[in-house]
Length: 87
Image (cartoon, rainbow, N blue to C red; front, side, top):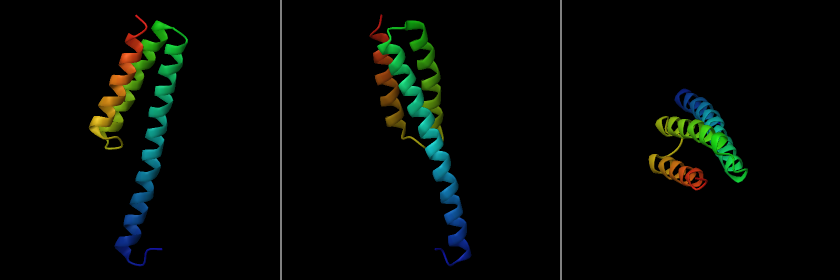
């Protein structure tokens, strides 16, 4: 446990960030699963709608520093490739 006042504050900040990051990562993963499920179901409209929402979530996570910029780009690219594969 932290002994100094500054270390206590830093610990609280870390806990807050960890909770926020896990929530955002979970939302991103859920969005990706929705896209993949729609693609496997061969539903073009649902997959495009899910892709749009998922891309938005991934970009937001990247902007907040939860995901690295290139990781976000890679995820978006792979999802887009799957959705375009339906056409």
